[in-house]
Length: 219
Ligand code: ADP
Image (cartoon, rainbow, N blue to C red; front, side, top):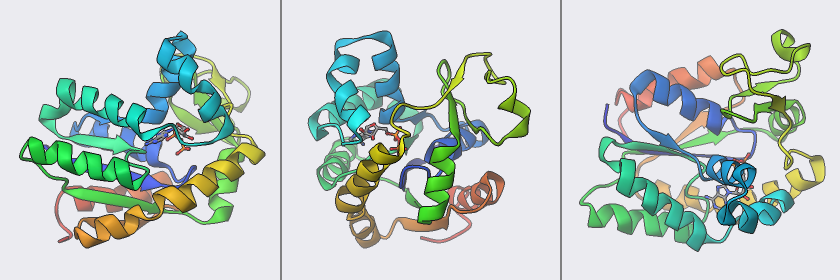
């Protein structure tokens, strides 16, 4: 199914998990600047090294770098629609995306906003484990993995993200509130914004998102 959508939400809102489920169910290609930057850092590339300190602090990476990544991605894979997980996160990023798409005579179908409470964010971030190899996300309380912190999909090591610490989380939440929150207005005005209650389990959230993607809910 060819759809162009962006998934927005605070750290711990479940963007990554939902993006993965969307790709699996609908075959829409996904990309996440956060995941790209983590991989670049693990690989020790110039981009990874340049941005490691910023992501480690919980600040947002400069727009120019992120927009460049998205432009490259769109050039290579953009023909079949997309799910952007964690992009755009600032007004200049949203404006750039709009003009890139306009040049391609395309537009966004959906901006999905995952709403989560402070308690949900704290609980998820403090218990989050992520596969260093493939990025699969789970939690320490997930009994199945607790004794053997190995990814069920690729056998990679399940580790805590180094920005999932409580003081870095404060910075990430502040960045979200000041820089990303204004995008609700931006996409609200374009009439493509849909708010989804992200405090529920992943299947309940995904069922709402699926309905939006299938176009059962009018914009
Ligand atoms: P989360 O949403 O939990 O913060 P992400 O994996 O989406 O996790 O992002 C991790 C980090 O990568 C962010 O804190 C930020 O430093 C950087 N990053 C990701 N996406 C963007 C973006 N669109 N603009 C600027 N920085 C970004």
